[in-house]
Image (cartoon, rainbow, N blue to C red; front, side, top):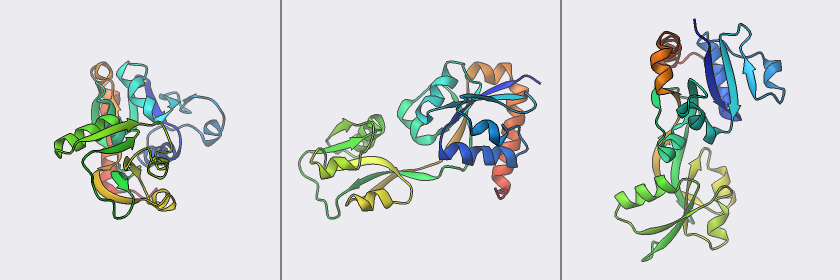
Length: 212
């Protein structure tokens, strides 16, 4: 079997995904290896090596062949439109990509929308026939309405706590978001046996909803 290089998103999603891999019987790093500051971590048997990267960078590593496989949120894939294969909905990292604003907000002739997802936001409002000015931010999007920078925001919503604490409410759901297993196109051909094994094991585990 050929070794697979897998790009993993650091943070909460990484923990959920390793739990899923473990339930599927796939090789995962030892817990002590994940508690260090190492950014490349091999599986104990050497069958796989994991690159620990920012969630927004996973699809970049996969598209350019630095990783054979990766785990990326559907929100990132929608925003970046990378040239990768989307193989499987892993069912972890569930959240929503939503429009939020102040309660009782009334649309004007032209409004501003702040977001970390400018492509998704422009596409969404264009399809609705609504003219908006999209302002791109890299973080703390919830501050924009309170500071008078924007009328609404487009952002990821999980529990809604951050919105409520900043005086905002969820107005519209653009789409439900989960993590996806993605593959480099060349790797998918060159390592079809290995990747097929991972996809089969993960698909079976997701179907059976194995507790983890």
